[in-house]
Length: 286
Image (cartoon, rainbow, N blue to C red; front, side):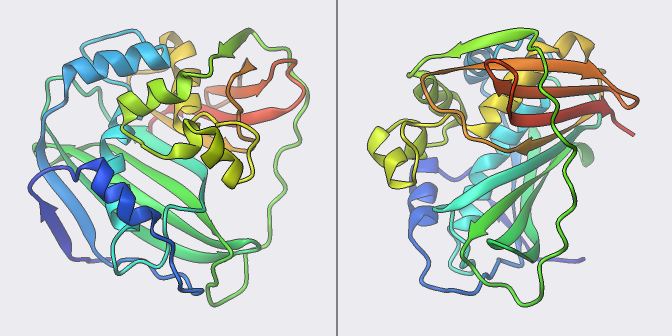
């Protein structure tokens, strides 16, 4: 599908972009922008990358993790959801799934071209689903792509929701590791991701959205799980994550890991392994 591309001079400042994305929409019908936003020549901040690696548990290397490139594209997600042509707003949107593929190792010193668009607006039993689709290029070569699916609760879309598929039944698993997540983890990840959503750092904001305490970002959990097995992940890989249950801060979670025919199956669970918070699959890129 051809689409107009709006090329920006630089990644939009998160404060201003996020403020627009938080303005509640008065529209009841979901509408998404038809254009893409793009920034060329993005220089990776090595100090911020080192801080990101520390907060998420990665080993600092010459090449970067796939989740870091997602973080770099996130300001473009926010800009699109704050665009006047979108009735879907970040406020109230729930990050449901994330898929990303690292097509080749990306060096921390490489300049990136980043592009994001919104597609696949569709009905859901509880609102509308959208996909924010990103791509990173080096010299015209696609080195990373990813899609984040969000649920916009309460919004209407013409049509009927797809029949729900049965999720694989969860069998309690013995965690191979347990992580104690401190109350300040949301602030730490906000610093490295530049995601200023207050539900991750403010008890008042979290309560306003129905959480007893702040919750950690789903993409921190995604990154922390991959960091725990980075020695077992191939140089090019695809990672898929489903975010099932928020993790309150402070708190303790477990990590369960098992191999399957395609690669690795990971689960971030309650500390006893009884229930999953996030389910992940990692396998070589095809």
